[in-house]
Image 1 (cartoon, rainbow, N blue to C red):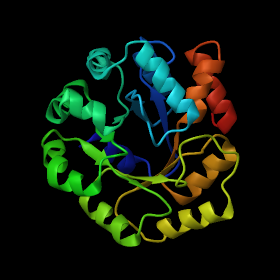
Image 2: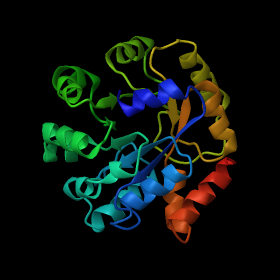
Image 3: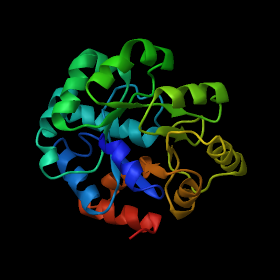
Image 4: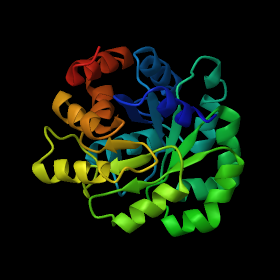
Length: 258
């Protein structure tokens, strides 16, 4: 069973996933960050593929991507760093990145490399759902990879149900139509959106991301979905804290988790 499905089968609530940009803050940090997060109880990880034009991301992740590119990070180097990661890491690992670098690498080659290194799925924010169905789903399925689709407050119920019918793993529920970035609280409109999607009783688990940075936003996500995804907050801590263990410790402090 794919590790993503296995996680949601074993743990129904309060799942925590963390995003970081590969190659940031230093080019050789990838496996250190992965192991440190796993060792501190994080359930799932999103490994960001740096790109020069990350349109869905806010300033923090845009800057981390720029630093990673300057550090020489690319997909070939990243897969090399992940070559032996499954010797010590058992939690689900998801690649998150834009279509351009994946297509330059070659989509089937990308899927093959994911399987060889133990990657469980991918999130490609700018992959149109129609193209996913027609051109990418069969290849990803062949390599046992889950393609995770995003929904926003503007996504129609018809489209959400279509995504739910044609994907497995989980649905990434973006908290707002804006870019990524830490928020202190979720307003009434976002809370209503969370409750509306929850009430649809979809077959796929829901993970809420964008804006989660403290206990209040984390708890709001946990109350309305299977779990939460932290991105910008952790990426920023990797810059401000003295080392990776300190960044992970501070993240847990900010979220008030043990």
